[in-house]
Image (tube, rainbow, N blue to C red; front, side):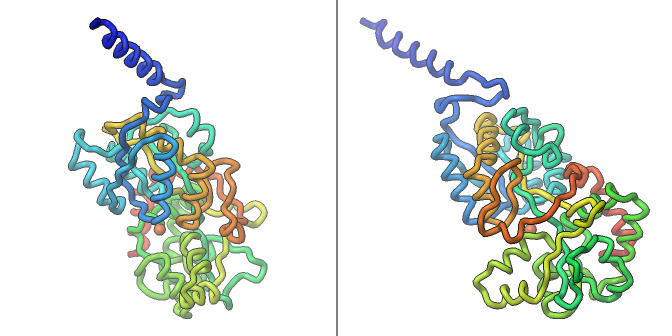
Length: 353
Ligand code: FE
């Protein structure tokens, strides 16, 4: 009988089709639909990310392959690859960097009920091209001597004449600083943000140089009294087993700015990602982004880089709790990209190199 194998094959095809049925949010359901692979272009390079990929494989059967690079390298690579790009998911730090990928047409919109329910609206692109999966705060790091006695500080302090010659910052082409000034422009006004940038330049202890960790070390070494940094850098030093790193944190104070009554709250940025414009494994890409919102993935993501979970109600890992008590600004992080060019112009006018 020849009909039997044909029927068997037909039944198998039908059950596969059933398994491939779409959920209302557009993602595929069923293990069969998601077996295969996923190519992640990532600007994150933490050992713990291997845990994420292993956890995702265990949950879905999907094999993860990664291409590493910094945000600019990944953008250039995807542009060069064009429609043939194997990239399915793009992961980057800072909404300003994700915006550059979005602006270059390298990300596509994703409709997912899971993502829009779990990730607060201000931490994702309104059009669904990228989503925040972990949060970081833009903090002030003071020397012990200059730390505010009441624990309250404001971004405006960096431009205050009392810190003349006592401020350390990195260069203005750095995306963290571009996002910071973009946010201040939105919170205040273009004029006030411009005056702030000029005030910070007047207060610089030295020409902008180095990364965030270098600013913290400079404060610890007494070269300046206050610096601007991302929270995870200071927390990394505070949690370090390296005596020199630990000492740098011990000699400085991390302050979440804008916590006073009526103040807007500390500026928050994200690490996040989205689905690549030409993703060959689109359904797998969406499943991966959804996996990143799971309790397990949120904990791994946060702990790997001393960040805070982005998902509403996700638990802050135990080790980060001593550094997690602050009120974030409610600003949509999408503003950082929209105002990036304006921020760069204000930095240039101010002479902030
Ligand atoms: Fe960083």
